[in-house]
Length: 230
Image (cartoon, rainbow, N blue to C red; front, side, top):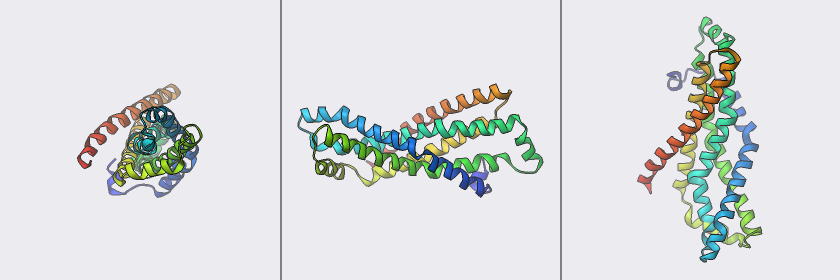
């Protein structure tokens, strides 16, 4: 993976996967983010109204989405959708000896297959995370206004009071780190695939599970680190 740092990688593969990760995943990210925000309002809204804290609903939802839910849920969805596909593709190339053919042609499989995919995930996950965060806020606003009878101005003013710039930055940083983890885990498992079609299936499953666990562990560590700035 040294090519990741020396910038010796395939730019065409990078752009192709950039579109694949970002453009082709927008719908599932939209659905995930929207319903996450809606559920948050449903779960917290009534309780806040009971104690007369309706003015904090929007801010609390924004903080929960920015700091945790948007980056983590988006990364998990991408790990399942894109990470599994990357592992299956590279694994299929491995068992059909296409990876060996690359080596024969003096092409490094890591620089050609792994690095462009990892970089694409690193660049697109922050964008998808912010997209999910925005969708969650809009979904939450819809439920707050329609179900709880909250004024939209009250909802938005609460967000302005509680949400800070560093919360957005933390969300984007988490997205980038999660993207790297998904790329490294999926590419590694693809290149280590053995045992025919059954081996591809097993490695794909291992890749998704390992990526999700890595995301959760990294999220905990990044959250601890972020406390220095709060």
